[in-house]
Length: 239
Image (cartoon, rainbow, N blue to C red; front, side, top):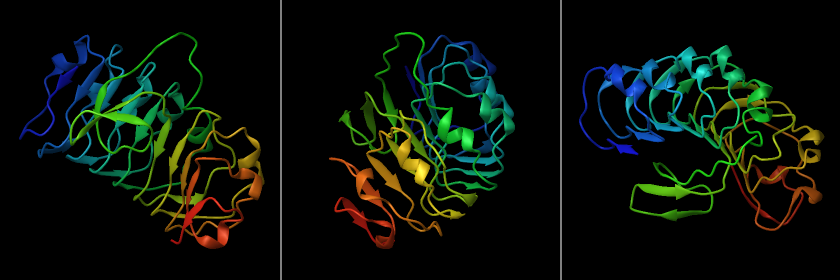
């Protein structure tokens, strides 16, 4: 682990970072304005990379599709814009993808909900300190870092994504946040037929309509949505 969080780093990142044999690189909460460094998306060994809470500008680089078994990608709270690169569809075996609080646009490809979070073909246990929020069960290490053990997270909230919400989602996905986007359409009944493992589902501040059926509720799940969508007694707060 290389922790460079909360510094005042300026300039471009050295290309040597792309060759380091690291599992986790933390570069969050710095202040330099730059485009997202492509070098960090070319490191085969790097399982987790955090660039949260910087001033990254421009588009997400297409090199993100080169990542091999990327366990964690954090690009939240930047000023990234434009559409998701087509190479996003090449990603698999993610545990946490957080690109929330940017200026990203376009529709969300259905593959992101279905294919990014897949069972691994090998035994790999990832328990490492990463900066960010604490959406699932974790052990807190400090005020800004947590350890995530078994939690698959897709956080796209607070962008400008358009189009419908998901039709189906990966059975591994536990935390899905689509709130504060320009999404519309109706929730598909198939969403609740895919063996969902969801424990958190947030579509507040969107224009998504439909109904969450009673049998979608199970112990421990939390819905954050318009109360008109809830057909069960699980936790549901008004948008």
